[in-house]
Length: 395
Image 1 (spheres, rainbow, N blue to C red):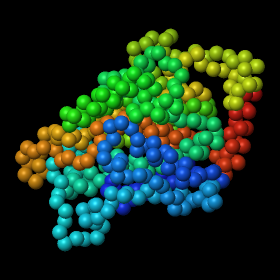
Image 2 (cartoon, rainbow, N blue to C red):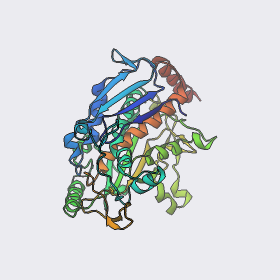
Image 3 (cartoon, one colour):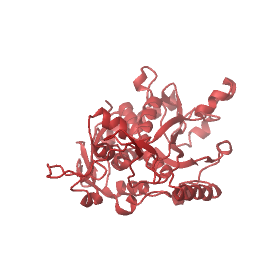
Image 4 (cartoon, helix red, strand yellow):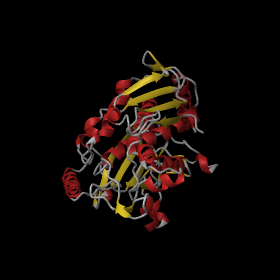
């Protein structure tokens, strides 16, 4: 297990979501308001369901922080579920005289059927509760802790929506992204024209009782060269990132840099040419490196290690499995054909998934930085970090 690790618990409609975070250095400035800003970002986005109108996610730091700074011990985070008041009987922890009506019609594309079979249950409800993407709220809280640490090292992480359904941003005409515009966009899209098209597509899907998927992109800038390693499979940074992103609900594909497009190119076109940087330019940069890349098709990772360029990760998210016009299924009680169970849900979660992707990338990068630079307190880690950068420049 890594230096920075966490464990979550809680059900979608249970009392609360909780996380225990271990491995963060002492003396890192951290406040609940900082984490809450990230939680709010996750709840926004065109196409979200009525649950987001019920919940207003707020974190409570239970331990690991004193006077606004981490103290080196495990950090406990709590996010209460306001909707719990409507689910106390269905999700009672204590035995009840009469159990709630069972859910027995699994949703195609969800964890329902595999989960109820694996755990030998007669009711799908426990699978619905834990497999729900509601769990990602507390992951975003953990990611905020990681992000706060990465900011001290000059690492900044953003995300934006690349595609919803077949409506896709033109990747071949990349230009600097206006991140303020992305944050103001209902679908977190940098293109104002495409934003309207995406919103119309979501409206059409909602009217039909259907759902939409898409693609989001996460970009980490200021990442130091040398995170991860080529020496063993489980230390490769790209592998760790891919696992983290794939762990997000409904993600079905991950690519780094140019990704699958590289398969269509010749080697002379696929790789990023290395260029020397003039010494006068190096001396002016905050993170001086005596070289640079003409392009970044590798997405900031080569041989399982960060190479100093922006880390670029894209993920494909399938349409949500819960439809207001449910798909055909079976009733597990009778074995006969039936309509799948309907649970209050979203129409499109691509914009929110990008924020979750930021959190998961931050968690991996924080772990890799702590692994690389060590230290039990922030001052020690930053000293190690600066010494490392100084050594690269002199090499």
